[in-house]
Length: 328
Image 1: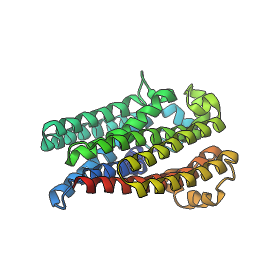
Image 2: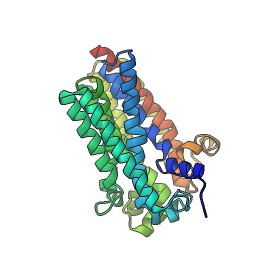
Image 3: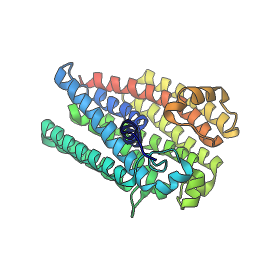
Image 4: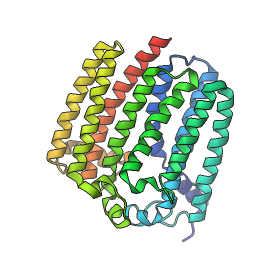
């Protein structure tokens, strides 16, 4: 089956998985806000846009393209409509896709690092290279970190939670101590979410020998482990807010934790019908962006993530703003 030029371009964009680019934007925005050093100038706005491009379409897009390239056999089972298993892209075209994106990311990142200069420039470039390296070995043999949850979850946590916060913060200022703590919280939150996201590929993971937590201990226990991690993240967040002098914020974080726990109990007791009123939003709205699934547990995770991520994002943005004001 021949694919037209426009369809080929769409397939090249799809393999970069644009919706995943959004996942890094809150961390990037938080790191910038917490610096308290960005100026309302065209220079800084362009720098911010470049930061989002480097870690969104290029960095995250690279990791998604590599993942599709090396997961062809798994995707034939789990996601047969993806560009390569569906025949819209050949393996050679997919190779060119992530190779070109990688080169552009390194060149643009190098230019920005030299523009920033000094120790901050080196930290930014080292963070970017570490992210690209993790994005590659996550899916590529022989390491293929995603084959084992004890390697894959930390890799995702570092890439999405730590590197993004530090890179964005160092873009405009020295790294703030509070940002290191927030990066740590995002590390563990990302780990919890990636653990549950594996629900959707349980069948393919089992056949392919992938050691996801769901394969090893079952869906119900996976929910329990992930929820404990999420709750500890919120609890530490509340304590940090108090220790930084944001006393009112501590109470707000505790309220959001209480809401999260109520949601978790409902989903744990009944993954199929818990928060079923949210399913309409997934099927007809957000599902077109964050993904759909026929797996009950994965649908439960999607319902949970919509609320949990919103609550966590609000907390992050408020605290990042307060930190930024402190350093202005």
